[in-house]
Length: 435
Image (tube, rainbow, N blue to C red; front, side, top):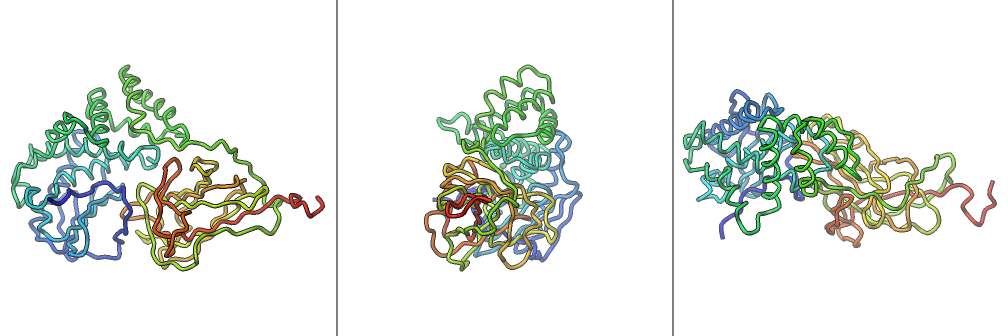
C-alpha cells in the first residue's frame, strides 16, 4: 500500500514544533523566505517559487489579502512524520522524513505542490476571517481544496514542469482532479464543500469572494446561531439575487452551530457568595504528557455535590508555545451542560499562560450557576505558531475528552489537569440561619 498524501489541514491532535528550532539554511525570493534543513537547495528554491507563485495569483487574480512575505520552514526528520500546516497568517511549516518525500507523487505518494497551494488557500481565508470558529472543518478544508486546485492550474500555466527539480505533471492534481472527485459515486465531504465554494465563485466572480470574507469578518456572529448574521453580511456585500439561494444550500455544510443549553445562565456577585466552596477534579496531580489540539478542545465532565452551586474559577496546568509575545487574541472557556450545549462563554486573554514550563494557571470567571452534571471546555484555536499545551495524567477516569461545544467528543489519553471551584450563595446552607 502506498503512502498517504500529506494531511494538509490542522485538524488532528499534534505535538507542534516550536519557534526554538532554527533552520540551518535560508533561501529568499521576492515574497517568500524558506528556512530549510536536510534538503537540497534546489528543492528549497522550488518550494519558494511555488509559494511565491501561488501567493501572487491569490493577490492578482482573486484579490486576496496575503502577507507581504510568507515564511516557510522545511525540516527533514527521519523520526518525524510528513505533515504540512499553517499558522493562519503568514507561516507554513513542512516536516518530511527525508528529501525523498519531495519527489513526484508517483514516487513519494505525497502531493507537495498541491499541498502548498492548499495552504495558501487557507491563508486567503483565515487572514480576513480570524475568528472562524463558526465554520465547519469540511467548509474550511473544502475552500482550501477548491482554491488550492485553482492555484495549481495557474502555477502550471506559468511555470510548467520546470517548477520542480523532479519534473512531473502536477496539473493533474489541480482542478482536473477535483472534477474527477466530484464526478465519483461518493465525493468526500471536503470535495462536496469545494463544489459549494466553486458555485460561489461562479456567482460573484474570482474577485468577489474576498469582499464576502471581509464582510463575514465584520459580522457580529452569535455562536448559537451564526447563519443569520453571516447571511445578512453576505447579501449586504453583494446584491446578486442568486446568493440567497446559494446560502440556503451552503449553510448546512459550512456553518457549525454551538447549540445553547436549555439551562439558563444565572450569575451572582462575589459578595453574595459563601467564602468557602468545593474544588472538583479528576486528575492525580502528576502530569505525564501535554496536548495542544487543533480542530477541537480540552473538555472535562464534573458533577456538582447537590444544591445550588456557582462556577467561580478554575485552574489549568499548562503552558503557551509559539512567539515570545502572546498573541493579541482570546481563548475561550465554555461552561456547558452534560450534552455539551453552551450555558456561558468566557473569553480570556492568551497572556494568562506563560511561554515556559507548565504551571497551574488560575482563571476567574463570572460566578455562574451549574447544573448537577456539567462540562468545562477549553478552546485555544491553536496553530503551528501559537497555542497552549494542557497537561494530562496517566489514566483517564472517563471524564476527559477531546471536544468543543456541540461536538460529541473522543476520550483523551488521561485526565486533563483542569480543576474547578464551586461556591454557593449566602443563606443557602439549611444548617445556617439566613442573614
